[in-house]
Every structure is written in C-alpha cells, then in structure tokens.
Figure 1 (cartoon, rainbow, N blue to C red):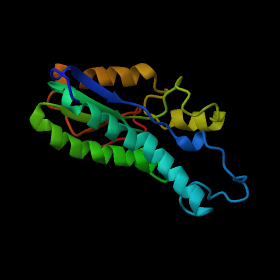
Figure 2 (figure 1 turned 135 degrees about the vertical axis):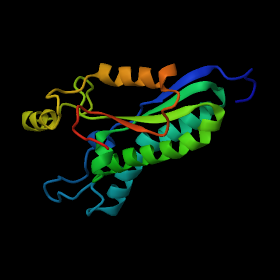
Figure 3 (figure 1 turned 180 degrees about the vertical axis):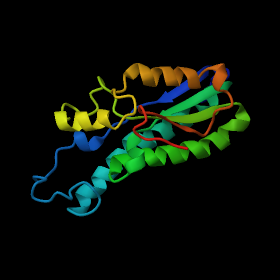
Figure 4 (figure 1 turned 90 degrees about the vertical axis):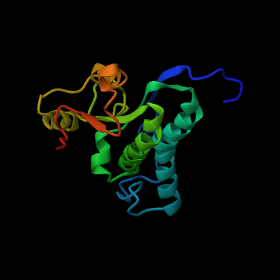
Length: 190
C-alpha cells in the first residue's frame, strides 16, 4: 500500500460470503435433476459456476482482503475469518469453500505469527436473525437445527460478535490457527 505511514489496523474480520446457491436461480427445475449444483451431476457448466461463485464469495474474498491490508495490521492484531458449521459437512460448494477457508487460515496463522498477528476462524451453526437462509428454512428444518444443539437454542449474532471481540482481545494472543465452533454443541471437537 504505497504512501502509507505505517500499520494502522488492529483487527480484520472477513465475514463477507454466504451460500451463493441461495441467490442463483437454477436454469432447470431441480425436481428434474436433484443432483444440480452439488458437483455430483447435472450440467457441468452450471456446476462449475456454482462452485466458483461460492469459492469466490467465501474464500477468495477473504484471501484478497487480507492480502490487501496485511501490511496495515499492527503487531498484536487479529485476523478473524467467519467460517461455518457447513465446513464439517462439505457436501456442497458452500461447505467446501468454508472448509477451504479454515485450511487457508491455519496456514495464514503460521505466516503472520512472526509478525505478532493471530489468525482464527469462527464457525457458527444456525444463527437466527441473519437472513442466511433467505426465508427458505422450513419449520421442520429449523426444529432440526435447534434440536441438534446441546443448549436447545438458536445462535444469535451477539454470540458471534462476542467471540470475535474475545479473539481480538489481549486475552487471546496465544490463540491462533484455530477454528472455534460457535454452535451450541451442534458440532463438537476434541
């Protein structure tokens, strides 16, 4: 970044993205070929476009943004990428793109650690009030998503915001290269 006096950012949160399959209308009625968009069949051009769209939205946007501002992050700063529980079930281009984001973040952590920076992923589960499902979530699916949690509730945007706040705090300086699942136990790690 030519002309800058020096580092001036403390925290970068990459949270752009989403499931582009929700916004791209299929060219064909999916009832005619239920494999459309999964990468397991259908029109190859459509499948490739769906995968590229999710990779661009969920991985490449974070890579490019981070690359653009990396020189502006101060030592002691944090890079926080927003992943998804969907990465654990990568049966779609969305899940695979979020899994790639987590893998890239692990490598990024090793790269930026010597500069005094941390890099982590927050992977939410179902989070109410975000519009992620674009009003396509049935009551049955909502019940199943909440039922999969150990605490019996939907996540809230504040759950993610507070986790990001912590990761950006002095108390998290030795936490890096991690994928923190914020999903009420719907996916557990050990």
